[in-house]
Length: 414
Image (tube, one colour):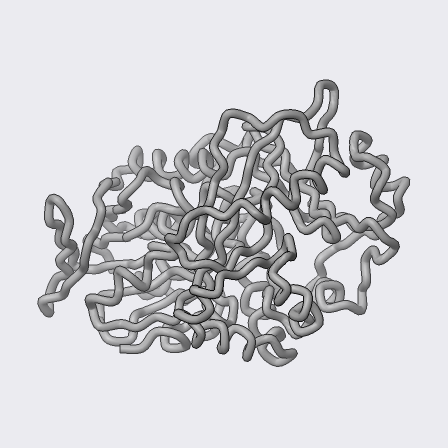
């Protein structure tokens, strides 16, 4: 099967989908209101690994919930306006914080995570940007003696799915990262994890190769989408049409689908990052998750990227830097950060469905409409593999993994 097809959204998921469709002979138009990777895919820790499959709303969430409800945690902050306006999403999100749902989501997400790096490597080889990838592992550290727990929620899933985790003592942590201050007593290294030094540029370079290979990239702000029974009409300054349409618009996907009669239970988890210069003569070699400090630090082309936890606020509400301000001194306790770079503080919204699994597949009520969104914190990593699976389905191939756990009808109603 081939012909023309349009993809809405030029983040990691949309670009990944467009490239895989292109490789199968489709004439692909990729549309976004901004340049590729300008929004959600721009801001993240840059990790590509096989271990980020345990959903945030696992059964262990209930132990942390009393602390989160105080609304002073660096890991989770919330906005009452969001909870009141979107209470069904929160109810379902908490409903899925149980062992059975954790098992189902972890198993499904593992199918994406284990295939993610291979797809990125293939894209990098084509785009000539393999230099952005560093195979250095991902370090999780604790200020106490907790360390790696093979019987804990994460550890038990790592053991089950064969994810190598190397337990570390304080001395071993110091050997790996000599410039860390000696505040960490235990930790572990996820050896199979890799690091991207500039996620935004990585996706931009993928998109540039898509264009070089004959794809069409259009910058347009789509105000509404309608369907006349044969074509989709995309309302913009210059109206556009599409015979077939893929919605991969991240946190804006529900807005795109609403005029077509769809209701999507899509929430967002906002987050922030800021870049800092390391003090002269110091170096951070790999991404570091200070579990007790509630932040992640990642070495990037622009400096040391400090990322916050989750902010459960309305998608478009003003910035609130409370979490960032809370973790900056904690990060300086761990690593000799100097002044911030000139880059502005970034804020983004990660699209999340109540079971922490994305939607990958056909829309319920339109024959030529497909959906690919809701990748929460792993969109950069899983964009290319999600795009491949959907492109296989659209093209009449058998996808590399079962797409039933990602079916749209879970959270999309018409």
